[in-house]
Image (cartoon, rainbow, N blue to C red):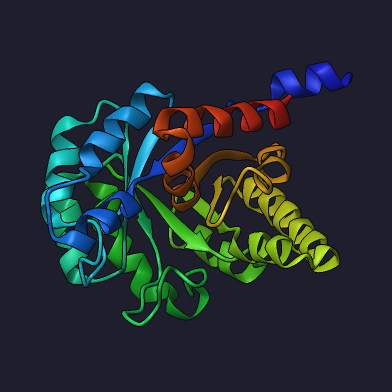
Length: 255
């Protein structure tokens, strides 16, 4: 098979735009601006395939009103990130978003520090996600690139796993390229393993212009979720040009 045919057979690579940190900037002043929903609509216009928003327990950025407005105004799918708590389950069941991504959450962390521990909480998570699946939401589990976690996500009935790329990105930023390449190999192997089990594979966390292409090139991955970097880059480029450049790099990596 030629390289051209291989590229042509790859699944289209979707871009999910995370708008959490538009809300972070807004909340720093306690005002109504900037509006995360406006950012989401601009992201749609720039070609984002979906919008991701994480409603944290402490409401440090996205609020309940933001989720209400996103559900009302989006014309692309909403990926609702949430912890596995009864409160968040009730909110998800009320809105029935296209996708629900279960993530670990600690009040003291600045951002999500690692993947969800599925293997040790398999029974409780299986019961937790069942009503979400029955309501029609696609359930995704945000996990480290680890075989045991992927197997557990598959057993509990998740449709999707999102592989945590934070360690790979951090190692690149530190200049520790040997360890970065080891982490990329692990992501490559585990994307293949998850795909073999029949799971849809996404990836995200910490991706930048410098780190996105090796991840985008992995044929099993069909969606990247990127937020913080693009919101930061939009200060210098504007939001639409920042998204256009990320999309260009993704498409280039995909062939």
